[in-house]
Length: 138
Image (cartoon, rainbow, N blue to C red; front, side):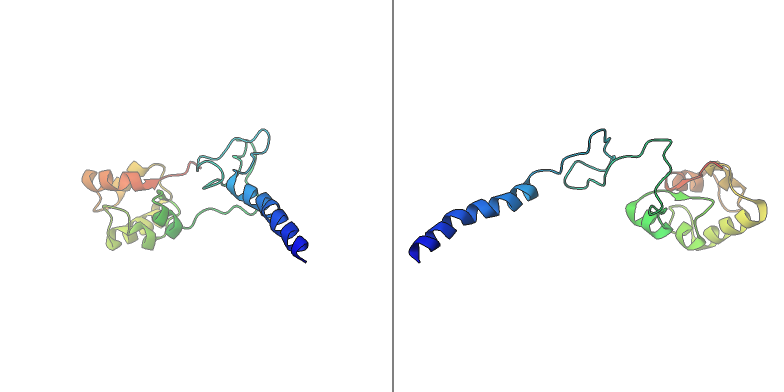
């Protein structure tokens, strides 16, 4: 009986070393994989960056306005809802609603500088809002 316990005690570290090794060493990168600009493996590594001509997979969805705001990413001026636009520096709830109304009446913005066509948005407000907004080319 003592001999079996001794064998188990000797083999136990060997059995635990394999899972421990896989947790401590970084995940191997697949061959030909260009990492996404989100960190190095194993932490914050999301996978391989797609080729420029490759369409995104079906499970990839665009970020919602709230997610973009939480991550500090700019909002698309032509797609953002007024509730999200109200959180852009330089814009209030009233101006965000005016932007959405102008967008539905006059059509989409071609560039962020097009915000000046909205009443109440001047050069100072545009300078505050410019880093938080972008316009996706058609």
